[in-house]
Length: 126
Image (cartoon, rainbow, N blue to C red):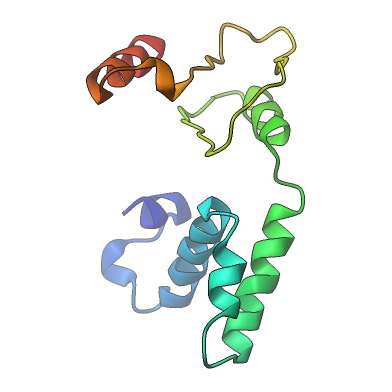
């Protein structure tokens, strides 16, 4: 439904716009995919053009995608969408948010004893 809303397409008119909606969803999935996505794709038995195209799209989208770029893009928008960003790695370096400390909260998941505590912190922030 979000794809239809974002593209301003009626869900009842989706037969005519199927390719547009599919491409939008594919880009969203590739953008949010993990870093091992190209590896999984490359291990497919049938190495066809579709898989190569997906891998190429992944690298085109991710070449300029970094945590600092994500923060800067969000802070330059007039309406900031609520976002939760998480990583699987340890962050040892201090991240500076440049005059927007009240908009960004950095938490370490290991400090929470339950999902409820994490949910409470997220709800308090938003």
